[in-house]
Amino acid sequence: MKVVRALSVLALAVISFATAQTITIAMVPKFTNAQYFAATQKGGQEAADALGVKFIYEGTVNADIDGQIQIIDSLIARGVNALVVSPNDPDAIVPELKKAQAAGIKVVTYDADANGGRDMFVNQATFDSIGKGLIDALVKETGPKANYAIVSAAATAANQNAWIAAMKAYSAANFPDLKLVDIQYGNDEPQKSFQVSQDLLNAHPDLNGIISPTSVGFPAAAQAVEQAGLAGKVAVTGLATPNGMKQFVEDGTVKTVLLWNPIDLGYLGVQAAYALVKGTVTGPGDTFTAGRLGSYTTQQDKISMNILLGPPYEFTKDNINNFDF
Ligand code: RAM
Image (cartoon, rainbow, N blue to C red; front, side):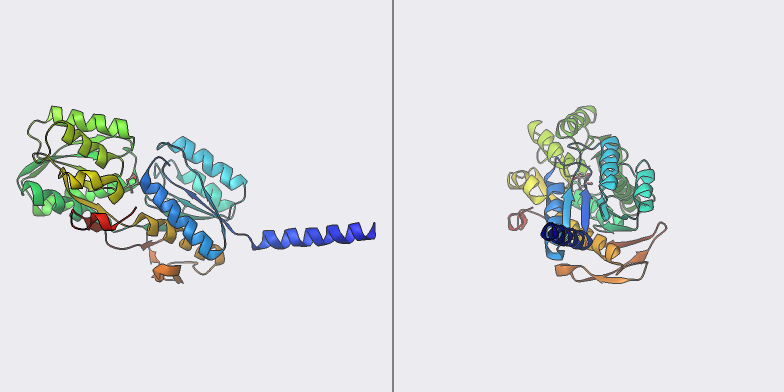
């Protein structure tokens, strides 16, 4: 009896020691059906392994705000320590994120921001640098007098909407003869994005270019241009992974692809969450070390604070094969 009791006391001690030590960080992408988010998962897992914390990655297959809220609700119930979320809707997500915060969970947004309920936003690059990069890539092909259209993600996507606003502002200030004739939303679904791209080409025979600031929309738009026999006539540029675009860059349909490193973005998101859980970062101006990416100082913003991964990269025929994400 005594031995049994001693053993169970020991077992309990071991269990409570283990629980006290285990930090769990959960990443919730906008959706799982994309190489882009798989790359952020890879980086998140890498950071979690380096930090010795448990990592959960859970999302809906397609962009779905209700499903995303349900997933976060179950993660709150499971008692995770931190959430790293790319919201599908910056407003609809807020009450759920606030619920997590009220339960003592640290909330990081990454990739796309929320309009409240987060402790830190890990931004991939400034909105302005992305807006400028995309317009410059387009103008390089079409010249400054051109008609272009945008194939975006979901109409509620905070990141795409911020990039579109930045494109419009940069273009208005620098290229008065560049005309945005249409914006269509493919909801980050391949088939829908392809369909709206085809519709755009049919509806605007005078179209000179398409910008698609989404990793799902961009290859779909390139495919539509190629299938219509318009490669070289209608420029296509945007944001997507090099792996998703290599074929179109190789065959000449696409000249320029822009993106940041999504592996690093996921890695930084988990590092930031860990710094919040550990209390290394408690407010704007605090500095923390994000493993192999070095040190970051948080900047104050109107909700809480944010950090920036860095400038976007440009991929062309000359360098795209050097990247594997
Ligand atoms: C899609 C998503 C994501 C965006 C990338 C560029 O994968 O909309 O939020 O950052 O494109």
